[in-house]
Length: 294
Image (cartoon, rainbow, N blue to C red; front, side, top):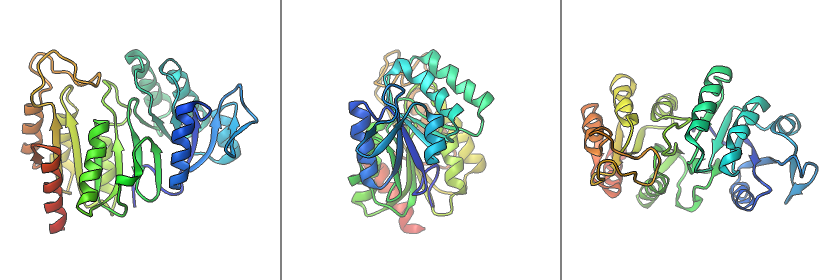
């Protein structure tokens, strides 16, 4: 099985008529993902390589049965796009766009929690989600993936998401689902959301978790793992040498006042029984050892 997306997921692309949206939308479709619609109120009634364009997500859902959305539009329009998708009836919204204002993220995060609690938001500023061999929503490279599990991946870092997939594939280990949750301060999907889903997925036998400096998400995940997870977890936390007060790439990746350090995160995870790799490659070796014992 997989979590959040599979071969039955039908995706409407908000931004399919743009250059980047079209490029990745077509790649997703080529992989086998059901990209069933795009939206653009100015181009409703047209199509992109046979995919119909609708004026709104609601119209796309009504006409195609879409149940997921991929948002690939400029940052200033993301807030309205997310709300349109939720109001339109999709249950998963994947926001690839980076640079979304933090106050917009906080607004639609809380709006969805209050008014659309059954809608799963992934991102913003994330590579998306892939269930290898079933569906890919976003920008994850498919040629570095191997399907059929038994490892689930969840990562804050886009680049290290790809590295984790590559490490598994090089060792001939399959992945059930790989979720890039993004590194912004207000992510729609947390480590805990993914860990809970992996715990319930019978085909996911172990989890590879990629964290980074900043915030308390990894410490919160460690508490959840200690209390609720029965499956082995291997982790890598990026940013061991990051200087305090300096943002490292992601808006959420900043050590402040001695909090959010990689060392503290690794200690918290280790105390929860998680095996810690000192590099992505070492984490790959550790997960291979775990899989060999399953």
